[in-house]
Image 1 (cartoon, rainbow, N blue to C red):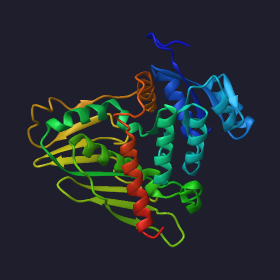
Image 2: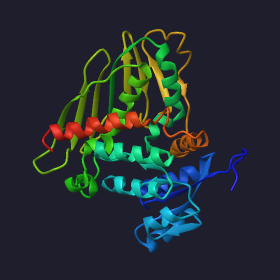
Image 3: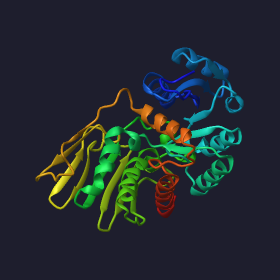
Image 4: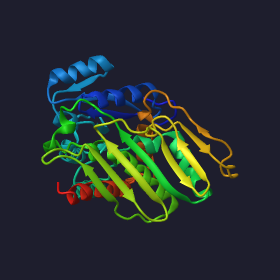
Length: 329
């Protein structure tokens, strides 16, 4: 299997046959330049076969161990529920596979540290699939950011109101707003601070939940010269635009800010560093961009990413884990 260039296409397998796996498969196989999904694995053969027929994949495995042992697969996208991530990442790394894991990568900081150490020991790439950081519009914003006047505040939220059933509302499965969607605005703030060379402190965390239930809403407030008000909810719809502002200027990430395609200057005269608004639409769901970045890292023999670094994943995991624990979880 060859790409349009000289390098062979990276051969992907997917662990987990749910909705997010289908979106990843479609985006990669329709739009990615550097890889193709060739295999699917589920916990039973029938489900894997159905997925393979639907998506036109050659290989279907009825166990994750079969995927780990497959000579047809170089990299695995882990798309099972997040309490199962740590064990499955380890299984794939021990089998010699590179791993891209759906967010949140894990739910315990000690697990992430151990898995990163294992990946380094094996010479393999392990990254969290935070796709917002790989969208072309976000890359353009981060490139321009140091040239703009110093930002003073970020406001971003991610919230919806799904039916109150299933894994999102199960404390035993690490459900709740913070782990499900809170990681998105936290990642945005962490990446902006990283790009600007700003130190970050632990946020003030407020949770909305009843005893024995998951957090239905979570608010993370950061103080300092660059403050942030970040919200997450699985109980109500929240504003889909994000706002980055400084003295007499504001940038708006329009639409669903976590799928950034249009970033607009609002108010005042833009500086020379902002020659025009950023408008970089993507095809499909945009997950091909994280897959292609992952492929590029492998081709350059990187064990970490400049966009999706282990350190940023670690920072966000720490904020959520500490916030939930500090609130009595």
